[in-house]
Length: 288
Image 1: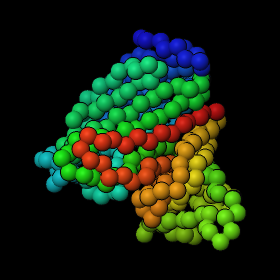
Image 2 (image 1 turned 60 degrees about the vertical axis):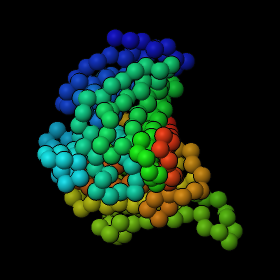
Image 3 (image 1 turned 45 degrees about the horizontal axis):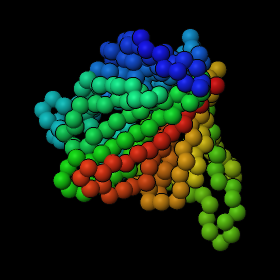
């Protein structure tokens, strides 16, 4: 067991277990995170101390994908649940089977998680740092190790249990002749879906275990501020961003719901990475 002193408090770090095997617990006076060590990495659990995990855990392997045509015989991608790093734009290669043992190290006040060398020649790292007892900084990194230049965006997906209420603030700035909001829909999304409510200053998205149809919406939002309330826990995500080149018709924020999951996703700008170059994307989480 290790203790890391922060301005917030002493953060206790120790190895434990979860349904996926070994995990690392990062615990303050207010909240606890579990990060997988035998697969992933995934931030597989987020809870108040002695509270309920609000992240979805795929204990019954409901969401999987056969990827052996791309990554070798017998290879399978599994969602596992919780928070993960992906690369955009989405395609078949996005579903990388990250099923190997994850290393970690404490660097200053952060814990850095590093999966094994990937077959797609991207090096991925996930960092977690407590800023306050109930606030953490999540940093994703992707480095191109291939000899060719590759255009990607970092894509952070937080997979929560369904049944809660998501509220996303929209831009209200008067831009005169220029637009200040955009909405993007996927082919399977019914724009009359009763689970979404769009107002001038916010979008509310309510997932339900009783409605199985998938629904996804995306948009660009300068300085993302989104909350998800489930039971007595309020999870907030903040991302600083500027107008840039983003995937999916210019989206830096996306949300997907079904009867199994409620995803809250942020994306970095698209970048052309030469060999050895890397991309960084930061989120701030607050749990109340």
